[in-house]
Amino acid sequence: MTLTTTPEERFEDVPDYDYPYEKVPVTDDGAEMAYVDVRKTTESSSAAHQNASRSEDVEGDGDETFLLMHGEPTWGFLYRKLIPTLSEHGRVVVPDFLGLGRSDKYTDPDAYSFDLHYESFETLLFDELDLEDVTLVCQDWGGILGLALAGHHPERFARLVPMNTGVPDGTQEMSDAWHDFANFVKTVDELPIGMLIENATATDLDDDVVAAYEAPFHTEESKACARKLPFLIPQSPDDEGADTMREAKERLSEWEKPAFVLFSDSDPITGNARDPIRDLIPTASEQPDTWIEGAMHFLQEDAGEEIAEEIAAFVERT
Image (cartoon, rainbow, N blue to C red; front, side):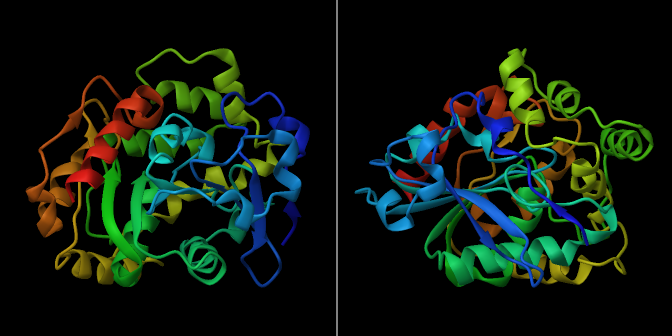
């Protein structure tokens, strides 16, 4: 399968996300996943990222580990408003999906599968970074895979913060808005990444922010993952990934560690999954019944600072 890497100059004007990053191979054919690894004492420097050392970049004094997992068609940039607050409490790890952000990209949509994404995160998070006692903050596809990982590797996780996401095992109902989105992605000739982000946020985005979401995609072929992801969600119990999600769902139904379900109040895409998740995870009802008001699907963009404060308070009380 042909791999491509987005030229670094595409990221030169990305605002407020100049943290050092690293890339490590996570597949047998050497595809590399990019991630940011931040602590309170990390000095942001876009010029330093190529030679950034993990041992140098995680010398903070906090004892928490936050894993921030984004969805489609975004990348770690989506979490830039949360990092300053969360890094006051410890380490913040923000990976980019294969095919998105700074990670390597297959140009053939058929190269992507549920198992590829799930296994690449297992490799990065557990084999390469050996993360433990993780507070998972996840949204959209980041929630699907993040919650699956937590269900299958509960010993690695300390807390869960699912946001605008679901636990699809092939038995769920997808919203009308999701079907409209999937049909658009399937049929449009050129996928307008910036427009998709703008249509799923309540706030007006500056031009440089829209450009930052478009930056990872230097060709139409590089959008192969963004085109394929909607159709990798298990829609039937027989689909790839359905067993993985079903087993995770069963284990999440017995979850004993803290969980804080934090959805926005204006998300037509995944809003219908909020109550099922809160009912699924037993400890979720122990936390405040909180909604992020005036935010849509990409709630990190609409209310990132508020969300960071809610998560910090959740950590403090648990």
